[in-house]
Image (cartoon, one colour):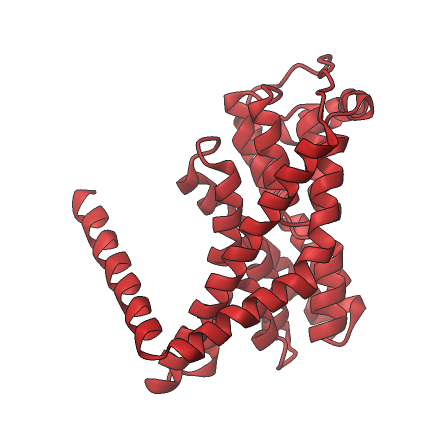
Length: 308
């Protein structure tokens, strides 16, 4: 175990040193990549994410959230062994996408509305992409088919929820009758937390977009196959990986898109763990997201065989 940690530390050190060297040797090129990442965030992510972050911060403090938590608590407990509050977060995430779910899980945990044992189960079913990204950006924009984007969205949710359901079979039932108290959230607090959260997202996208460009450059230098570039970029930053995979429409390319979006790539994982730090064990969370991504990819592949 000690040798594995040491080896991982050496690999990380080498990667950081290589990135620093590339930035120093080609500052203009990679500064432009950072700028392109910021533009991607400002045009595609910020307009959709900031309102949802602000509204969900307020919504989770309303009496309505408390009452809705009570109503869906039996179903949430039966399916995922989570409370009604956790079920509400899962629905919010499914409708709005990254990083609303992770931020809301963190808010509820800090407010003592989630138990220690429950937090991980809520987090893994509440960190999903939304229909706007899969149907709009990937379906209509990259695949030229909102229908295929919709299928990817359904496979994505099925992969996330199916693994969450199976993992919950060994967990104890939570109290269904609990009515979670509403929290007082001021508009200024909601706005401040939302802006800080969306800035965290923007920083992650800009940095990992530049890293993706570095990997593409290294791939071209060593003549790596295009498939390897797609895989590496998708695991690093899902948007660029999906864009490359979508260029050649096939069951495998749709499966790749489902995997990248469900796993999130290192960029989305960093965003999520920035909110979930000290709330869930990072290693378990990443492993479960990988399993969810594998199931979503398999479902997307099987479905695409029937529709392509």
